[in-house]
Length: 78
Image 1 (cartoon, helix red, strand yellow):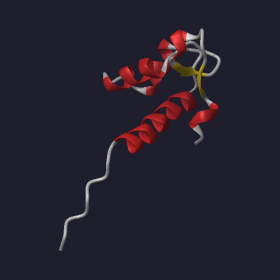
Image 2 (cartoon, rainbow, N blue to C red):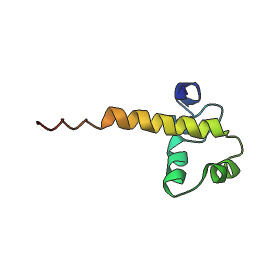
Image 3 (cartoon, helix red, strand yellow):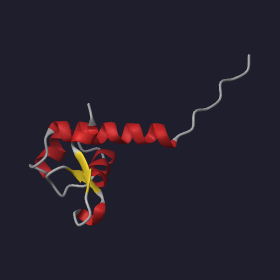
Image 4 (spheres, rainbow, N blue to C red):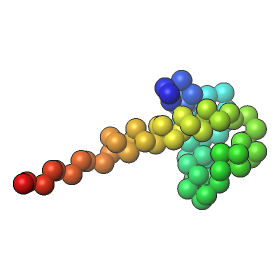
């Protein structure tokens, strides 16, 4: 999945935070909901303008961001 197709950042929309394209729903809001234990279906009910693919894009974005931010541990010397 190319999360870049669904996630945008625009001046004047949600204070410049990353949002789902065509909405004002921020990635931060979706990630916080997931972290609190909400299911995809819970989030879709709360934000009917979203699609399941939008939530998958947010998860893919978070995974890619974590990869960039977390250094790999060195392999143990044998």
